[in-house]
Amino acid sequence: MKSVGEYMMRVKELSFSYGKNKILKNISLEIPEGKITTILGANGCGKSTLFSLMTKNLVPGKGNIYLQKKNIGGMSLGDFACRAAIVHQYNTAADDMTVERLVAMGRTPHQKVFGGRSEEDERLVEWALSVTNLLDFCGREVGKLSGGQRQRVWIAMALAQNTKLLFLDEPTTYLDIRYQLEILELVKRLNTEFGITIVMVLHEINQAIHFSDRIIGLKDGHVVVEGAPEEVITSETLAELYGVKLGVTLIEGHKYVLTA
Amino acid sequence: MLSKWSRNECGNTDDKKLHGKKIRVGIAYIVTVILLCGLFLAAVNTGSLKVSFPELFRGLFVAYDSNVAAIYDLRFPRIIISMLAGAAVAVSGVLFQAVLKNPLADPGIIGISSGAGLAAICMTTLAPALYFFTPVAACIGGIFAFFIVYVLSWKGGLSPLRIILTGVAVDAFFTGFSSVVSSMSGGDRNGVASIVEGNIAQKTWEDVRTLLPYVAVGLVLALLSVRKCNLLALEDKTARSLGVNVNRARIGISVVAVILASISTAIVGAVSFLGLIVPHIGRLLVGSDHRKLIPFSALAGAVTFLFADTLGRTIARPYEVAAPVVMSVIGGPFFLVLLRRKK
Image (cartoon, rainbow over all chains, first blue to last red; front, side):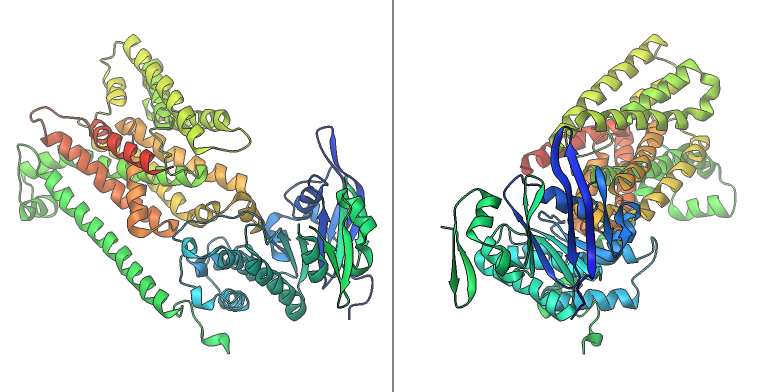
């Protein structure tokens, strides 16, 4: 077990606004190493903004974000890409792009501008394909895959980056329930088997409870809930996060939120 | 263990398909090279003077032959210029399409060529003594036109349709303005007229020497940016997450594309549709991987424009139809078909 106090990422007194519209108001939080952390919150609570800031797609108005004690503001994109991989919500690729070529693009941050693939590249691409169960599809064109397979390809591309930290922005959107579970099981496996620290944004509260070690709940740009899901998810905290009254029940010792 | 796996050992059915695709790409390249050679010989022999291949070879490399010498001085420059300009415009089209994420982008249609043409015309009209700097002026004009189109079509993102519409308007403005400058300067000044009408009939080795270095450098830069082009095909955020500075890559590739389009405009005039048709056919034949698409487009662009020029020389003899005019006549309908197929 990792000792308490080991953090992969630390957000310190972070504020961000679009014009006069304050989105994040002086928030601080930690992403523990080797854990799955899920960010929850209603639409417009600031979770996408927080995600963009943590992934260097936005620049903080105030405050800093540290990745393994280094300020990400001072890192180049390439340097950041060697330490953290991101699976964005919406992705496109040319229809005739093969799975293998696309996954190999994940090696970009580690490659020189003009150079072929190293043995290390080959090995990691192969590993990423096998972990995501895509070895049989590696010559297939991305345009001919199902939604669930395609999402696995994007995860494989991020894995090929070979980072200790993986961000996923609503990885289950656009997928039916079978593929949602398949993707979340894969994420869980990446965490338990390979020790990859995961940060994701999810909409489904029950999935967040069952697949996360830690929940961060945002409301109006503030962190209002932070901790282990079994402890922090209650009728009261949900009411605060989403502004609706939801029942919480225990089935075989597991917490379930009654969302309907 | 996994270590035996290699790039070629994909799933079985996929493996065969991949193999088939490789062969198809190879055939496409070989056929294009053969076409280029055949067309070259046909173009050499199009006109009143005719020489056979052995005569040509002997005349060029072994002994003096008056017919071959005449062909060498009169026809070779325009043939080489057609090939260079064709390659440059086609590759410029691929690059614009990669940067703007728009398969309909073409340096002629979105006003880059006419911007370059206007600058070149102003230069030859206002400061004929600085003729040597015409290509530089053309490049500046092209960059200016691209800047205008990019800024005017930006609205929180680049919509493909808005780029085309803005480009068409910018193109019309520059083309009109070029005619104004040309008319005001008498219109019969050789340099001006040749830029406006895309006349490559009177080109000399001097023009080849002007065009060649720019095109060579532009094509090499284009080949060096193939990986960036492939990365730009992903969503911007995804490319960023792979460590690519998307804006910087866009600007760099755009500059190369503008230079290739502008320099050809300075020598052969504005060419429309070539940068659209050739990459489109290239994608069908060799796929959208820029490592294959860019070299193929260079070859196929040379073939297409040389074909247009040779056809223009033969179709209404003794009169000549300019190659860019032939391109417009062939390309217009092609563009319409593409527009209808794209939703």
